[in-house]
Length: 252
Image (tube, rainbow, N blue to C red):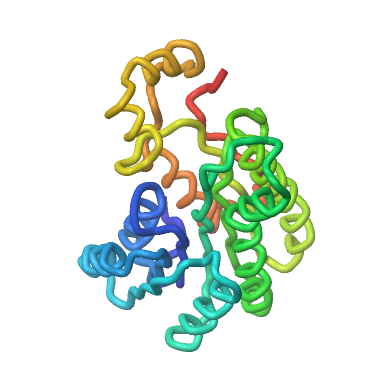
């Protein structure tokens, strides 16, 4: 299937490892010019070197997006250098080890900013460019936790907020050719990720989870989630705007 994204400019945040890295590689393989953002410059440089085997014109920007003004500075610099983005995949997110629902307000806000605020700041910059071209794709990597409201309370609440934001924003910009969506992964294995650590330190916990909560009986893979990102970035996704797409192996 021709996705219609060859030559498109793509931005992936949280791209130095795991799902973000897989997404960046898959878009590069489709002929896109990919810019990646994360904190680890060495990992980003290695990723760009690997992507260069598919297509030239990739770039990276090493920064902590939680720093004040960092998302704006990063996007503006990358845009000034290589032009505006056609596709943005917001992969930054996580619990920040804040799990207590009685955490101070500052901790709730910190988790919200990490999972939602960074994306909003970037979207406010890139969407006007997309609207001017009457074409754009925004993909938020959310979580099934935002629907099932499980695990870390602040994290689940942030993802629920992100899901609502995706719906509201997607409906607002739909007439201008910009498709906004969110992918809601369930438990998946990625090197350096949560389930990698569980597998190394408490295999019984993984087996118990799979037996009681995964209809498919296994963890997902980054490739399985990235394939949905490719479709939602494609020319075929227009009728799916403002959609929340679960990719969770039948989580129970």
